[in-house]
Amino acid sequence: MSPASGPTLSGCGATAPAWPTSTRQQVVYCTSPSDVADVWVDGARRVMDGHLVDHDLEGLVEASRPLAAELVARAGLGGRSRLA
Image (cartoon, rainbow, N blue to C red):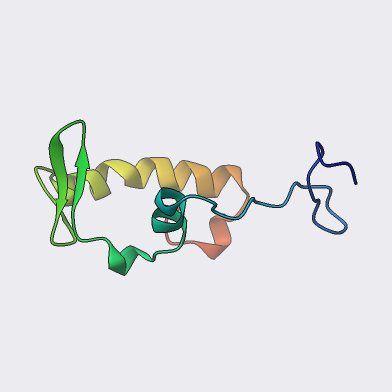
């Protein structure tokens, strides 16, 4: 293995993920979803106290159902899912 190629995962040829090296990377990659209470994107709060803000969650779920059903059908999993 050369330093430029990086490590590979045995048997699959995929490059292994790099370990977080900066404090910022450690915060992002070493936490779980339950550790996130608030999220700001471009100055706008999107998650407050672990809940979506300014989103119609029920509407998002309903809008995603046809897309999920299409994915299930394309994957040939129709008999294994309630979506197809």
